[in-house]
Length: 267
Image (cartoon, rainbow, N blue to C red; front, side, top):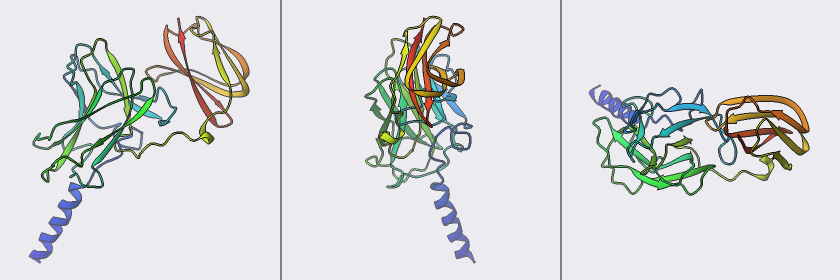
């Protein structure tokens, strides 16, 4: 009986050490959106926001993502961390989970850092990888297999979205932590039409011109807020944007079940 009890404890401990809640996708029924995320070393520490994907194109067409505002006055290592003992769960690193991928959308080139921490706040430090693209989604890969984890059990993940000395406030979107390896969008998923927006920049009206009928359009602010929507607009139409504030917007046009994203400026 004692041997059975001891064996049961070992099995329970094994599964607890591998109980990772991944991928962290920030979707309503997924992981991350309802976790407690603490912001640190970011001056006034604006909270991590879970918003509609501001650029649902390319390799990341998911519905919701995380938005981190890296303040100029914040430390280079400003970041966010999950709550110890909650969120990601308790886990050890092995061959199955040593590779951590993350999707990022950034307007600047800078390092992104990821750190794993134990319940007693021990860590082997962060790994850093710089993005190579701006104003589009890119997947970064962090290889923790070369770190000597010394059988450490982790229960916290820390993200440094913009590990850099900043000259301005930078907004970074991230998503798909521990997600699968991304592949380029296939040609079957692309909207094979010629779509133009003009004038760009625009003041009061924006004209959409396409060689196919656009069934609907959505306009998002650069922070991911849906600000306009309409259906069955044809292939040559003018949109009233006079009520929009000045700034950069993303127009998502849909035709034949596929979508294309175009950026424009309101001035």
